[in-house]
Length: 124
Image (tube, rainbow, N blue to C red; front, side, top):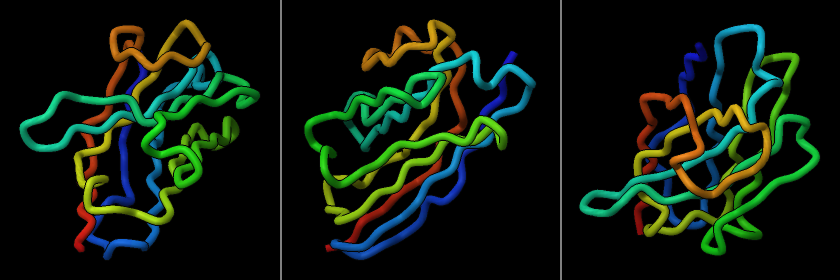
């Protein structure tokens, strides 16, 4: 069992930056690939970024490539999402998720555990 708690969301102006954190409970954090997803009002949940258990491989949605960076610190049981050059269309609830297959997936069905989400609002 893994429990995930996101933090770092908030209100920021377009062009600004935020760093989201996701703290995981349990001693097997490095057994999981980790992903970030987001869901805007009235829209389906969509993939943002994922990182392999070792951190050696990452994957990004086209909409965030070059602006967002996913990273992890296995010693701290934490995964991060650095978001730069934010746009109003990045406004959403951001969720982190854990994938026991340990490899990067862009599909939510592969993820076993989810956090409660953190709100990111980008004003124009």
